[in-house]
Length: 463
Image (cartoon, rainbow, N blue to C red; front, side, top):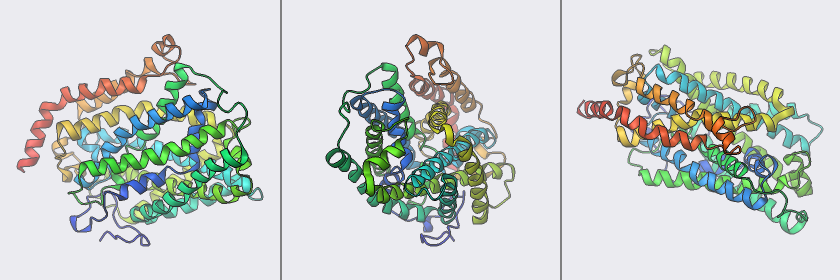
């Protein structure tokens, strides 16, 4: 039986949560996403506006706000899927892509979880080393990793409780940092005038902020699937939307400000210098945010990895031990990546974010159009776990075709440190690829599958 106690190891894995084990309220989604964003990686991402895109603090804040407000729409729309279907987010992908067709998409998402986990470890290790230099960054990385694994092992309820505590502690820490920076330490003389405005830089930062939210789309149902099916779609949407936007914009604003104090782009050192003795308080709290975020990454990564394995072993029943082993293996890979990328972290992280955006956009478009406009939330959940995919088949050619088109169509509009497409070059480096991907793929997928989808929905409803 799936436990509802935060101090006990969760027994559920990728299978549908029975109705008698559903618990919690929609408001719990606010704190899980508010707390999840209050960490050092969010601050570093906010710093990209002035440091990488060379924007003034005003334009950095405005572009950050726009990106989060837009990107969070797609993230929060996934929230209603968990209560309705009761399974993890990426298991649902089989309803669009087929049992085997979903494997490649899920594998990409696992890479994302590992990438974010490694990024968090690097920053968490560096931040703790900045206030406790007697312990090396790599040793802090290992310590943070171990605690994060424990969070993933205990699972869903502990993560919710932990993020509620973070919502208070880390939220107050962000406020304290802002107050201390402005009224005690003081701002640099050129704080409001340094940097400038370019369309490429502004839209680049909008895209970065939007991606931060879109990247959460594969997570969302993992943390709403224990809610009762009667949980209102609007309630699930607005609590998730409000939590993730408010939890993100304030630490990102703080990061944008700290970027103007940083020498050589070292935002962690700037935070420590600005806060002085109080860094001994706020840095460990933000490091605790790293643990919370990484527990979520490992938990979701383990569920997705188990989903891939179960595709080829449909009679295998994944138990909590499977989640423990899988999470531990993913953590080990992440530690290796963190160690290798620590020296050029900012460049590697920026490129990682850009590439991630291009592969997530078509998936979220397909998933949301299918759920809301094609199937209207009606799925044969049992078919998700069949080798042949049941009514959804092994491969859904229209979905796979749209996904491939969604990636290819973005290429001319890409503008990254690794590659700039011809249309982006003509637009002086403005990256509009993710907008093009969403606008093109959403109607294309609907047109291609609406008849087949309607027939499947009717078959499920009459079964």
